[in-house]
Amino acid sequence: MLIKQGGKHAGLYIAVFFLGIALAFFQTADAYGREAQQQGPGVHGPHGGSHAQPITRGRVLDTRHGHNHRYPVHGHYVRTVPAGHRVVVHGGVNYYYHGGVWYRPWGPRFVVVGPPVGIVVPFLPPFYATVWVGAVPYYYANSVYYVSAPGGYAVVDPPQQGQVAGAPPPPADQAYVYPRQGQNERQQSDDKYACHKWAAGQTGFDPTQPPAGLGDSEIMQRRADYQRAMAACLEGRGYTVK
Image 1 (tube, rainbow, N blue to C red):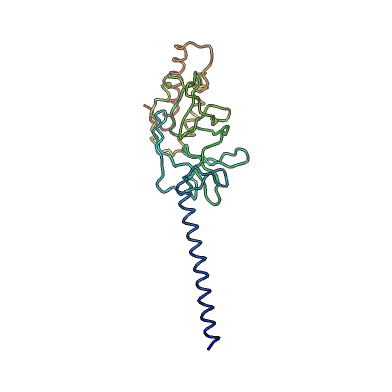
Image 2 (cartoon, rainbow, N blue to C red):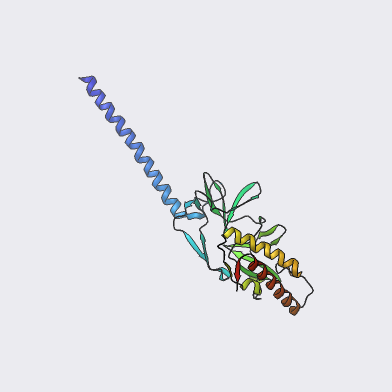
């Protein structure tokens, strides 16, 4: 009888012990969750990113420079990167680029990040705003600035507030291009870059690298020639340009 009672008491003590461990675990997890929620996506994680959160609803409207497009919040994660992405290696790290959004591995997932300065991509995002710094155009999208560079476009530091010129973007940046044949985002980017290279070669004028020593009227004329060549190339590839 004593053995049986002792066994009952021992079983009760064991149950209480494990119940205490479980309560401590849930209290710790709840405290961590509240801390992460208060700190938000800017808290750095093990891969230089942040305490990642799944992209379920968090998108922000980027209105800088009249850009007006929505992007996932930095620090949110996805299980797979969108189809049609490009992989760019920089500093021994793989970055995944799609539609103006940058990702990098974060454990078994991919976290939304800002790209490092100096990384080069072969084409600009499908939507961007042009900012003039003197005579040099900067291309802006999703809090990132790009300039023309060998092999495509390089990510650079933002221009200082006083450096941004008031000059309007060239006519080429004001054109509306419609994918008449249903070209996907990656195909549109590839076609725009190919037509840019072709138009620059045909006219001898690259609006991303305007030549020095030309008067304003001559630059405007060459830019107009470039715009016509760009439109002709895009229309030949199945786009409507207005």
